Amino acid sequence: MPETTSRRHPDHVEEDSLDPVAARVRGARAGLTALLSEAEEARRQRAEVAAGDGGSAVCAWNHFENIPTFYNWNNRPR
Amino acid sequence: MTRERVRFSGMRGIASVPTYVVMQPTTLCNLDCAYCYLPFRSQDRKMPTEVAAAVAAAVNDWARDGRFSVVWHGSEPLATGREYFAELLAPFDPGVEHHVQTNATLIDDAWCEFLTAHQVRVSVSVDGPRERNSERVGRGGQPSYDRVMRGVEALRRHGIGFSALCVVSEPTPGLATELYDYFLELGCDVLGINIEEMEGVNRRGNDHPAAAVSGFWSELVAAWRRDPRIHVREVEWSLRYAAAVLDGTADRVLPAQLDPIPTIAYDGSVVLLSPELAGFSDPRYADFTSGNVLATPLPTILGMPERTPWIAEFLTGVEACRSSCPYFGFCGGAHAANRYFEHGRFDGTETNHCRNSKIRLLEGVLNHARDHQPPAS
Image: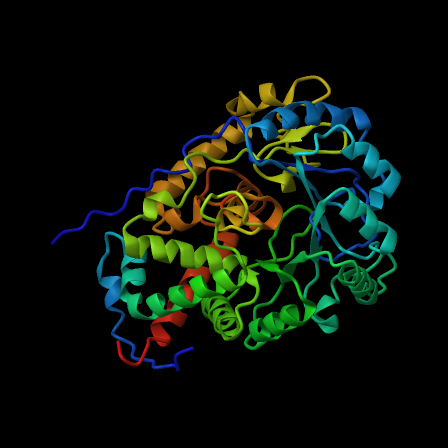
């Protein structure tokens, strides 16, 4: 994991009033890219990456998206 | 260059076919957790087998078209007892997946054999190390932690993988690291963290300082990143959204329609969208139910959700979120139960739950990314 660099640009990401959340994401692109890469590798290690035929992976990404109880995110039971 | 704000197109209306149903096999729970939202948890009202059969009639059809799950949920589903639980499972075809959300206190070797035989997936409710479980107590106030751990040890003995669900009542510095390290040791495959919600009979406040909550989530990402063996629901969802924004595909994150998530209460009554509303009533909204499977087939109930007055109001609220909240593409709109129990209505927008578990989550993850950029970038 990279060390804390705390190179806080003056929150340039908040400049875009039309889509401030997307601007915040884009503003963190460098850190996110590294984080996303590590997350992808972690999924591979956890065998969560879907198989090529989409059928055999036990824990494919979609599995966690769509299966019930607390995995579900957008509207869910607890 | 002028960019137009993304207009998110998902979550329009309610799908007529769910991806899963929630079943309440009994109203009884053998625990009496301080933050529980369920009103009848001290009473043992069991689901008649006729209710399970009526639900299975629909579910078996849906499962033929693809993956479909039944979640046996609160109160404590294992309080139903193995023999009776088996009767409730019997009408479902073998292709239907079953899940339990359990406090694990009743799990022993016999339950493990049952869960294995019926291929039931397990998620355990536990709030971290012993001292973090003081809210999870029995009817006499006695701690439950040792019983929970005995259940977890039984799962381990039988090689049954499990997920964990953790409630955080007070996000404080150091807690996220402590919890993540604990769950690594516990050995769960998946972890979900719920900041305590004010709903149902739990009227405890859930308004926390913004910095405390976003700091909690930032710290969780840092802890996870050191050893990402666990699939952490909140981290995965945040990263998924962030990746989609960077790829220009943010509008594909939300489902096209809301999942109706029918909850079938013990008596066959059906509550859509928010299981937390089951068992409650309000002069304005009556009992929140949309029908009963003993009188009306479940697909018929799901075919006319807007006839339930609160649902029409809720859909108005979803549109209000869409038009007013910049986090809509990540969140999909405030959840129905949080709107009702925090605002008293369904057409309001931002709730404390939105702030704690959506807005400050994303902000916390982004803060972590901002503060941990690769040196060469």
